[in-house]
Amino acid sequence: MQENQKISVYEYLNDRKLFIGNFYLTGWSNPSVAKADFQAHDLIGVLDNYTFKGGIYTNIKASDLIIQIFEQANISD
Image (tube, rainbow, N blue to C red; front, side, top):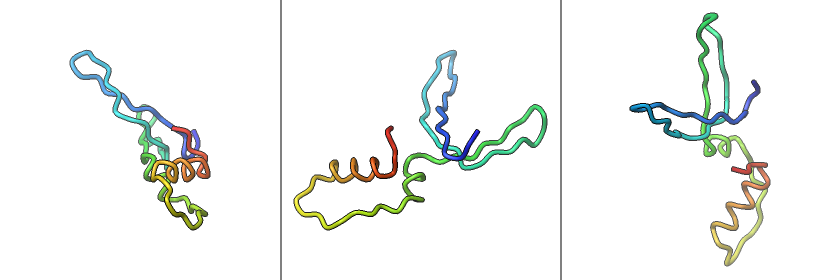
């Protein structure tokens, strides 16, 4: 495992597999042989640690700016 590795989280409810979301590892530990603890954040957490080197913008759609931010942060989700 490595930091910022994507993990997909699912839950079983009434014998149905439900997708909870994608998260990115921030840390983990193995308190025992049979137990692992994971810490993770979502994409907003990934962006929180990223400095966007943007510019001056006029008449740009927010969606286009978000695409630029994600591309510079190397996020493809």
